[in-house]
Every structure is written in structure tokens, then in C-alpha cells.
Amino acid sequence: MDLIYIITMKKNLHVNKALDLLKSSPLKVTSQRTRLIEILFKNGDHHFTAEDVHKEVDKNKYKISLATIYNCLNQFTKHDILKSVRLSSDKIYFDTNTKAHHHFFCVSTEKLSDIKSSDVEISNLPTIPKDKKLKSVEVVVNISD
Ligand SMILES: [Zn+2]
Image 1 (cartoon, rainbow, N blue to C red):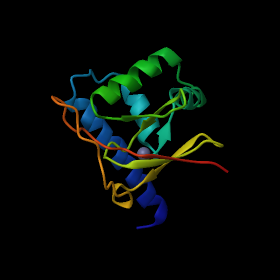
Image 2 (cartoon, helix red, strand yellow; image 1 turned 60 degrees about the horizontal axis):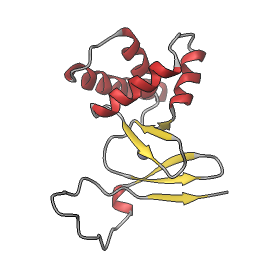
Image 3 (cartoon, rainbow, N blue to C red; image 1 turned 60 degrees about the vertical axis):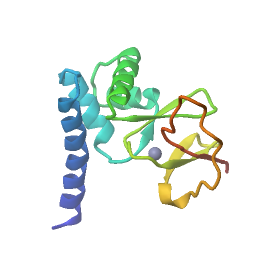
């Protein structure tokens, strides 16, 4: 198997996995959602904002408004096809890697990168408020140039 074949195969796996999630979700499989999934997942695990997606959609000569992209990304997040990462900055990042993991956030370049969940050890957590349960602990390590 040559490298190009392996990369193409891998791309398809990411897209196919996301399309399977879409099919098993209550969301209707529309050509618009399918196109967005192809754009979002073709490069495997990565992070992006709705604006990034809008630029990419334009480059591909598709006509999807920023508001529609926002709606789709939020629907995908609601149905666990994507994950959202909220930072102290006002931007919302979306993540194709929906497994629990941590992030570096570079405040100079505004880029997120993954930290494996096993690379961060949480040694002390506060008591969870009554009637609440722990959902996840995700750490953002802010860095700069
Ligand atoms: Zn991530």
C-alpha cells in the first residue's frame, strides 16, 4: 500500500464514521449536512471555528451561509458528531475528536492542539455540588509565542 492510498483511506474512515453518526442521529441526512461533514472530517482530528468552515465552504464553491453553518455545527455538537471547546476568549471552537482530551491554546496564533488525556493527571478535584454529577474534566493550557 502506498502512502497516498493510506491517507485517502484514512480520510474516508473519518468521513464515513461521521456520516454513520449522522445517520443514526435524529437529524435528517441532507446534502448540505453531508457536504459539511465531508469538509469537516476529511483531514481527521482538528479544530475550527464556524468562520473557518465558512471560508472552506466558499473555497469549495458551495453556498452555505455563516448562520446555517453555525446551526449545523451546533446540531452536530448536540448529537455528539462534534464537540465544542469553549475558551476564555469569545470564540467557540469545534473539534472532530469527540473523545475526552485536553488542549493547548496558543493565544498568539489562536490555534488549539490536542493533549492526550493520559498526559494530564488531575490530583485534586473539588466536591461536586449536591444533585450534580461529574461529566468531564477538560483542561486548557494557554500558551503563547
Ligand atoms: Zn481537540
